[in-house]
Length: 252
Image 1 (tube, rainbow, N blue to C red):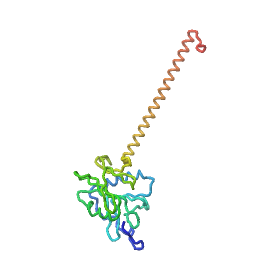
Image 2 (cartoon, rainbow, N blue to C red):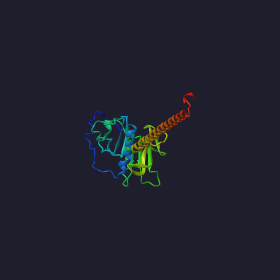
Image 3 (cartoon, rainbow, N blue to C red):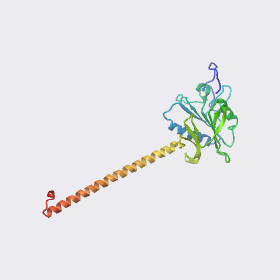
Image 4 (cartoon, rainbow, N blue to C red):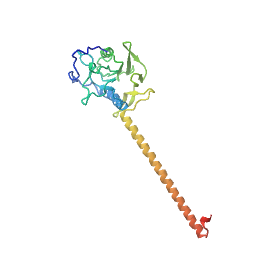
């Protein structure tokens, strides 16, 4: 992490630009990190010590422009600053370097494998994740971990991120009705964490199954009552027949 003198008159987030009016290159660069953030919002809904930024500037040096990853995760920070939320992520204010940074590569590379990687390394970002959906011969997902000041490629899909307590990996699925390969979070048993859409569908299925079970139970009770009613009617008819033959059924 870069060192700062706390006595310096450093600009705050309100003093720094929060947009350069440059649109993202393609829709995936917004949807992929947004999916990861949406899953965390449900998974960690009761935690307030994390922040996931999407297409937000990280100011890492007071004399340099912000670097804007497609997504990044910080732990040990306030989830919300105030009702206006964060304008940008300013390291000398946050005092916490993002633990994970995500870059989604488009047709036009923006230094994901070179200059940006070097900046994240010098910042001290522990995990650097690069997803290149255009790759065919190499794996589209690469996860690097900072070890002794250098990034080392981690193997596997998903890759377990012990300091975060989650794994990250790529597999085909559906998000917002789009069927393709997405990035997902995984638990330690490599089970994929369900997306919000999947959790809603899962709860609906559970509710439907519970309603069907309750309906079958009501039907079983109704059938049992009908059977009991028929048995009572049969017993009454038998009593009446015995009495017509001069036999007292109570004496039997």
